[in-house]
Amino acid sequence: MVVPSVFAAFDEDGDGKVSDDADVKRRCLREAFGMYASSSTEDTITPASLRRTLSRLGSHELGVEECRAMICRFDLDGDGKLSFDEFGIMMMA
Image (cartoon, rainbow, N blue to C red):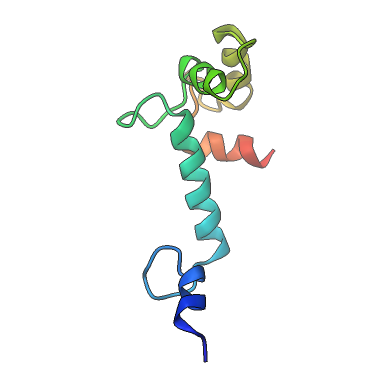
């Protein structure tokens, strides 16, 4: 028998089931993506939003052009920004 409080630690979404590793990883990835996204309404990471977040995290030496170069490496559709899927690919590289 699983003790309810122990079970709750593995039921991260509160659906009464033990969360799948893939679901947990995707939620963590989504949370990280949200930190870098350009706004809460736009679901992309732009060079400016990447620079802003990196600056908040203490990396003040990178400019927008360096951030643009970082994004370009994983910008698969060439739109100059990262979608959630492109961000996921970058994080797994």
